[in-house]
Image (cartoon, rainbow, N blue to C red; front, side):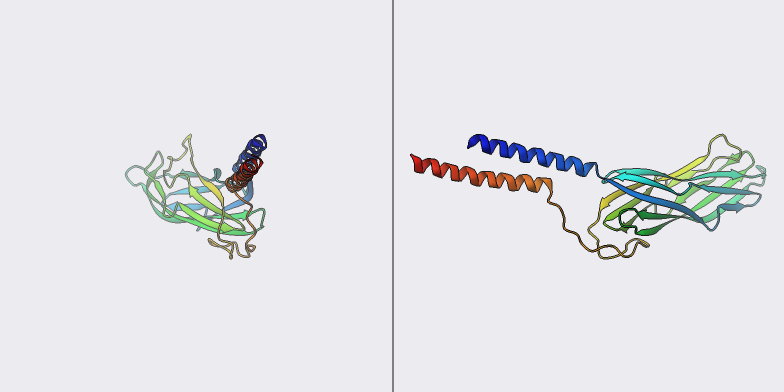
Length: 225
């Protein structure tokens, strides 16, 4: 009997470990698309800032871990001299449309910001700042927490060898909100679904049963004596 109890506890522990490993490795598929407002070209005097968006794409994120997605490349142009630089104070908005593959639900997040400073043909004192770099969208049975990877950034001078790259991190988790669309869209979320037992609960339940079996075996042993 003791051997049976030991084997039972061991098997339950193995099942729990496998369940936790599966949960950690669960992949969530989604697709995304970026857009910019008011325009992909932000003017300032003789110069401008061009926002080249990443093409629409699909991705897979591991549940509970951040997944990087590219957003845009920013470049500058100017013919202004140092004595009369181009001046910028341009508000902009980068919008992210996310689609949860499993549910088919789609929602949109809007990241507003400002590009300000001065620019000449051979120098840049331009900086950009996002006002709301972290937002959450509820789609289907998942929460998508999206964070801009560089909420404050500088822009390169015209004809520079390097460009300004901006991206975001997407953290996908299971949501407790199943009563409708969240964030700035997503509508029509499915109703609650039964939750599978947590691996730790399986272990505790199994150990409780094993304990009861041990007590019964002890009583039988006493009766036999």
